Length: 416
Ligand code: SF4
Image 1: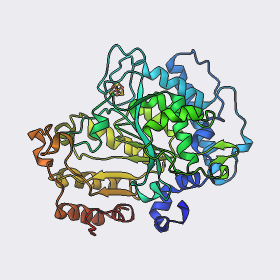
Image 2: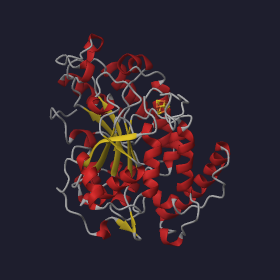
Image 3: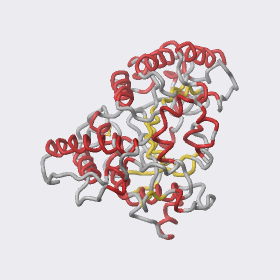
Image 4: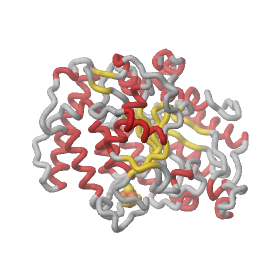
């Protein structure tokens, strides 16, 4: 049982993840179920600007209803399913965005629906999944006892030379093509098998926003047949290993209920954040670099600091459930770890942080790989124990909520 794990005795974890826990344990409806019940009064052939106006209005209604539900003053059952909903509006908006893609900070403005020109992610409208399974290696509140229902999308909008998932982030053609209904089936299967959440990751999920939002809109309404599952199982290494739960554990008022988890580099546009706000129940963002100099050098990514810090702050100010991940990298404790942790302490107090010690040189930073590029020499080793300890000591000095999240899986068994 997720809620009986010792991690929930940590007050800061409970405080920041209470919505997620309630949805995961089926005591509250996921945000997408609320979105489906908010009517919108706009013609979907209207201009994109008019659609965004309608989105702003619906978002206000959502916040009122969400607050009412959280306080127990309102139930999902009291809300009718309208002909045209906030959820439908989001699906329409992401399709429009795809035609001049502004999903992420690159703002390439290419028409990905047509695909004749590619942006920085090199994708057209097609989404591919490399694998999906019960992930038993995530943070304890997320992996729980039956795993996090993780779906790995291919390709990325950043170019980290050390990527720990390089096989899927660098190879946009890795994996199998999935459409929204197949993606919804994967989500359904993972949740029915007891996963505590649907964990959307990559590569990077942001660049697949259109496929993901449409899949969420279909969640629960498409149930896989054996034939369809057989195709999907080519991507599921743990197929048939988990038994299905009783429906009472995943149906809420008769509908599939699951927390949606956004596991991202946070290099997204404000428009993407606005779309996701009423769909994502828990955020699991990376905060890697302490400066644009480091992000350009190690990830060939400009405008990193202002984009990613601003997106983190927005999520925090919205009061979202969140766990931040920071990967400690060799020779980057002073310029990245300390800068990022200080910024979190100052701007997002009380947020659980995973100070991660498992960095290993990979991709172009791996000195044993034929791909090794000497430009990544400074990160071509694991961090030393002293570097990890310094990161922990610094986090502790700042008063960050990091110990219960970070140390239960510490590679070195180190303590600050
Ligand atoms: S997702 Fe980002 S990188 Fe890809 S085309 Fe859109 S704006 Fe460009």
